[in-house]
Every structure is written in structure tokens, then in C-alpha cells.
Length: 263
Ligand SMILES: NC(=O)c1ccc[n+]([C@@H]2O[C@H](COP(=O)([O-])OP(=O)(O)OC[C@H]3O[C@@H](n4cnc5c(N)ncnc54)[C@H](OP(=O)(O)O)[C@@H]3O)[C@@H](O)[C@H]2O)c1
Image (tube, rainbow, N blue to C red; front, top):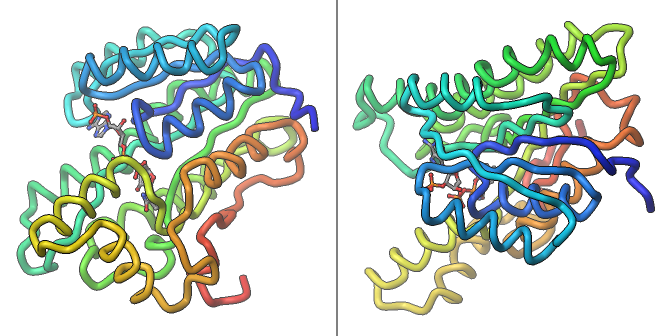
């Protein structure tokens, strides 16, 4: 299927690995010129190189910027040219007892997970409306709908992303710009893989046993396995395409069936 994305430009925040990289790669496969991002310059350069190898004609670039650092965010925004597709993917996650999360940590989560999307969307929306076409996508989570007791701070930010996507979409009335949110489920990204490996090593059990234990506890996962980042990317690339023109302001699931409500 031709997703009619050839020649478009995209920026994917937090894309030197994990779901962000998978999204960048899937966009590049459709002929999109992608700009990647991360904090670590070496990891980012390796990701750009890898993307170039995988899709030689895609001409990817990378911008180092840390979304906790306002001056780096300002520099990033200044360096962005015309962006047709913005994917607000960057996100911190981690287990923490509600009582132990201090104000600074709440602020850090809000800055990286929510304000990154606010700042980037605010910058690109005008140009998209002016040019008459554009896509803004937020990578949220089923945790934004069913907030986990041990990740309240994370779930709050993921709920805020759903609200942002829905609200900004209302500014696109009568245009061909759309703004949507993807609700991911438990995904075996690089970040999740590293966390699982560390916990498994701490408990002297294999990574596979640890993965089974985690997904086994999640009894509502109809998939009964971790999602692959490429499976999230497929939905994102569809929503980024002109084929998804009638979907706007929506929260669309790629959660492996973790959410049990019908809608
Ligand atoms: N994995 C899941 O189960 C899951 C499920 C649902 C939704 N999601 C969402 O999907 C998104 C990506 O998650 P993931 O699991 O793919 O993460 P990941 O594998 O840990 O990758 C995170 C990426 O973001 C970059 N990054 C981290 N902090 C940054 C910052 N402050 N500024 C700029 N870049 C930063 C990292 O590169 P550097 O370290 O070099 O900065 C890396 O490229 C998140 O929003 C997450 O909430 C994940």
C-alpha cells in the first residue's frame, strides 16, 4: 500500500532508540525525510547512521537536545525547518511509590513528557495550517487511561498528552491538518529491555523469565507478549499518512488489548 508520504518531512522526539527509532524508521521507509533526536550525541549519531543504512535514500538528520533544558529546546526549535509530521514521542517512565515522588520529579516528568509536546506543537502548528497539511502525533500510553498505582506521576503525564492531542485538534477545523494520540501498551523497547535486564540480573533470573512474569501479571493483555516497537510504528505511520484524513482528535490504541473497555 502506498501511504502517500514520499517527500514529507518529520521530526520525532526521543528517537535514537526504542519506539521513537521504530517510528523514524517506518517513516523513512515511506520516503519521509526524518530528523531524529536524543540527549546522547554518540547514540544519536549511531541511530542516524543506522537509519541511513536501512533506508539509503531517506537522508536522515539528528539534533541533540535534552527536553529538561530550556536553552537546548529553544535551539532545537530554532533549527527545525518546515515540519510536515511531528511525533511527540519522548517520554520518561519508571515505577515509583506515590508518596516518594517529590515536586522536582513531578516537574521533570511534566517537562519532558508534556511540555516537550506543547513547545514543539506550538512551533509547528502555524506552518502546517498555513501550508494546508500536517500531522501532529502524541505517543501516549494505556497508562493515561488506566493509571497504574505504582506510576501515578507517569500516568498523569500520559493523560495530559491525550488531552493535548484532543484540544489542539480543535484548532485544525476545516483544514487537512490532524492531531491524534496513540495509546501504546507494554512494548519491548530498548529502554524497557534495559530495565528488565537490570531487574532480572538483580533477582538472578533470566530475562525471558522476567518478561514472562511481567506480561503474565498483566492478565488483560490479549497479545500475551510484549509489543514490538515496530507494531506501534505501523499505527503511527498510518495516522501520519493522508489515508487517515478522517481521524482527528482521537486516541487510537496499539495496546495489545490491555485496556478492557469497549471504547
Ligand atoms: N515501552 C513501553 O512499554 C511504552 C508503552 C506505552 C507508551 N510508551 C511511550 O513511548 C515513548 C518512548 O518510550 P520507549 O520505551 O521507546 O523509550 P526508550 O527506549 O527509553 O527511548 C527513549 C528515547 O528518548 C530519548 N530521551 C530520553 N530522555 C530524553 C530527554 N530528556 N530529551 C531528549 N531525548 C530524551 C532517549 O535517548 P537519550 O537517552 O540519548 O536521550 C531515547 O532515544 C515514551 O513516551 C513512552 O511513555 C512506551
